[in-house]
Image (cartoon, rainbow over all chains, first blue to last red; front, side, top):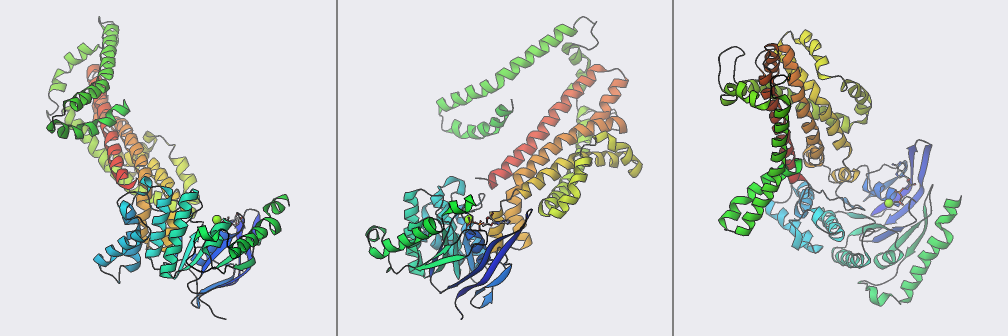
Length: 266
Length: 288
Ligand SMILES: Nc1ncnc2c1ncn2[C@@H]1O[C@H](COP(=O)(O)OP(=O)(O)O)[C@@H](O)[C@H]1O
Ligand SMILES: [Mg+2]
């Protein structure tokens, strides 16, 4: 069966001092175009590893990853990544950070003025128009994460990869950014894979939640479809039965069936 | 003392604007800060000179007191630009000759040091191969290289330049390498996702990320160069502040030695500040 993005029988093992460490085994997932997927699992289970495989930053040991039926073999702007700790270049202004990406990705196809407008457009999209001349060191964590998202969006990726994008933020900023990302995704129809360890975040944002078992040799334990209409509103969802059920199912998976202490005790 | 002098350029830069606006309170504040910076070292200097004068007065001490030094060397101090041919030249020409050698040697070591630093910073194979060798070689004292380089080059000036280069290259290599190795993996990943080419990666990410480290190395390097040139010139002769000192010693002109030492100290200090300021300037464009 062919699909937009497909992860087929993927396994990864790392060479370590204590011999090979099998991080992932037999991971299979098909993602449709425009779908919003969350990957949830306990810390260290291999979520980032899986995301880096899709990004092409890591190579699979076994199996393959196909995007539009072509094998992913190296990183590229059509699979843009928003890294966990924003990874903006501290010596460039907010504007120049996005411009670096825009010039590189659209340098051959767009004029200078078009590229300038495109940088500004993407910064406006994440609500950062007011601080384009600031350096990353001069803005808050939430703002840095916004710029990271603007930089990724500006590449017009086929798949947007988010590695715990809101993990380091306070609850209020986090909620604001989640709404922003939802709004942008609804508007642009991006295909998104997002790592999270926050159950509410996963349920609120995703079309499907991929739940991973604990490592070593982690794999996908269960996939939950979240059947909630969009646009979604966090206030009215709080006592929506579908929302509550989905939330309970993910909690049950994480804290009853795959509780982390079982692994640590072993 | 370091802190005070670092403030100086900034305060000076702000002064004209403030004077124009005739902001008297600001001018007074500025003056007070300047005085607070200048007065303590000046007082210490006077005290030390007084102590020296007291200790060496009366002709029994082996070293001349400051008043004697100034008296003996007034010709030297008052006219740094005389040139009587041979090595009999004013302090300006002596220091200029030394600085020329340092500039040549330091330029070589900066280019070689940064290149090798980038190499061992980027390639862990090169690091494993070269780092132990560098660690051993960098402990060799500057002058120990001189006989070998004289044998190799068969001439004084290239040998002196080689000694400068080999002395100052190690901190440049090692600091550059540390800077490169410290580039966060995230920045590299950004570059890979964007498919930056080699040169793009070098200029847009590697250089700005490691430039503060490079300048730390360059600053240590220029200090070592200046240490080494004075010692090397004592041995190779010719025009230069090192041989000037040696020559003065051979002629028992102790006062001239003292004046030359002060000149060496001041020039070394200026070199250090110069590279430091350049580093701050570049890093200022690079960091926050
Ligand atoms: N380069 C590597 N070499 C060795 N082990 C690694 C490497 N990268 C990740 N791992 C191991 O693989 C496991 C999964 O890591 P990761 O994907 O970062 O987890 P998560 O993102 O879910 O917290 C961890 O046990 C980690 O120690
Ligand atoms: Mg992770």
